[in-house]
Image (cartoon, rainbow, N blue to C red; front, side, top):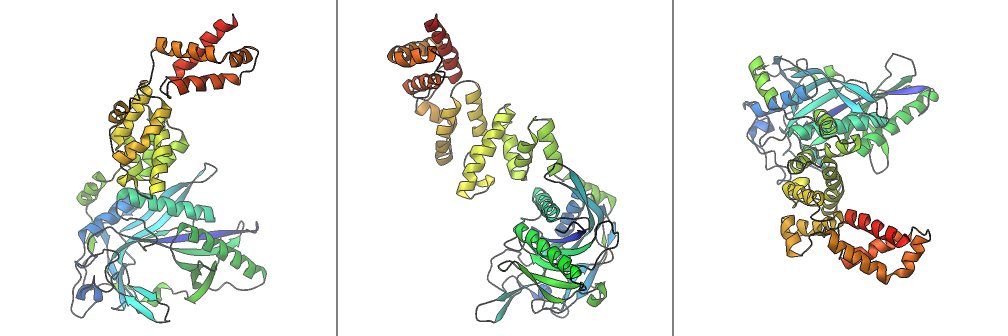
Amino acid sequence: MDSRYEAVIGLEVHAQLLTKTKIFCGCSTKFGNEPNSNVCAVCLGHPGVLPVLSRKVVEFSILMGIATNCTINQNSVFARKNYFYPDLPKGYQISQYELPICENGYLEIRKKDGSKKRIGITRIHMEEDAGKSIHDQSSATLVDVNRCGVPLLEIVSEPDIRTQEEAYLYLAKMKQILLYLGICDGNMEEGSLRCDANVSIRSIGSQKLGTKTEIKNLNSFRNVERAIGYEVKRQIEAIEDGEEIIQQTLSWNADLSEAHPLRSKEEAHDYRYFPDPDLIPIVVDDNWNEEIKLIIPELPDLKLEKFINVYSLPFYDADVLTQSADLADYYEKVISITDDFKTASNWVMGEVLGAINEKKISIKDFSVKPENLGKLINLIKNGTISNKIAKEIFPDMINDEKDPEEIIKGNNLVQISDESEITAIILEVLDSNKTQVESYLSGNEKVYGFLVGQIMKKTKGKANPGIVNELLKKELLKEKD
């Protein structure tokens, strides 16, 4: 990016809420059902129907507002946003305009250099989704209205974002909070999390905002980064060529890595907002607000601090383990069995994440119970088995879902820690490898590893490595004398 300019970016995130029914009727919100089957007269906007607001949608909205440090307005109002799309059968969308449910919040992102930045949140409001236009290969456009009336939260940031990296981190943090709260599945491919980016540029040091463009319906973190980078570069080049930036809505073509104009950018008055006459104002009193505060789970930032300060984990470990609430929960169940926090962290980040990534499953579907992993770590810690044997039996724990003690006993894998037994094996190895012993005593320390390997081979990997090292050094000293 040209060092004479800076980008000014704001994101509008649309999160589909995890309710079983739509916001104003009892139709299913299930994704993937037959087109145009999850519909009724209410969500299609037939004359004379009356919407009934879902209490669960309001509660989810308040949860998100509290989690992002917003003011929860005691009174908020639904409005009709009037516009025509083929997939919006009633010709208006029920949303919120002048009086949203949440305002003036923020969240913090942590950048690669470790610094933190606060991104303001202008508002969070409830609205219903529109349907979906499907452009098939015969050049016809099909309309599926299953999504009409599905509840959404629109989360609008302040124009505090300056780079593609910050936009990515903000969106990732937003998704993380939604998942921790359990109010959205965050699936961008299925459209349950979508993002529009408002982008403008200005000269470094200027306080005046430039003319912005809006890039619509970005459906992946990668596309958000690429689209912003493209648009910033385009605007700088246009200004350098003496062109005027036009306020317009753009569509991102991920295949071509280009943005194309859709229409001139609408202003609020173009939508002819007015309070919905069929819906009464929402009143969130103090009691309701306090009730919802009580059910808020431990959020990512607090969880991260706990993993660092209470479990003494490095920042890297804590950051990985708290990326999802389910992974953090799995780890905490492991350490309810073992107090070896760091070893538990290594196993969860290594073997556990490796296995679930290979199988392409979630931690919820992982076959090794956290209690069994905790037992395995304790068996390493108390010397019953070596770390090597633990890693060898871990696939059996995955495939057979067995208790580690059962596998160890069944395969006679208990670690040999008896010093007299190990000493006898060491003497046998030294006696049969006299050339290597002489080489070691002459200063060739590389031979030491060979001798350890021979001892472990004789014990089929079951000898306690710490005891082997201690006793082998002792016997080699005797040979030297």
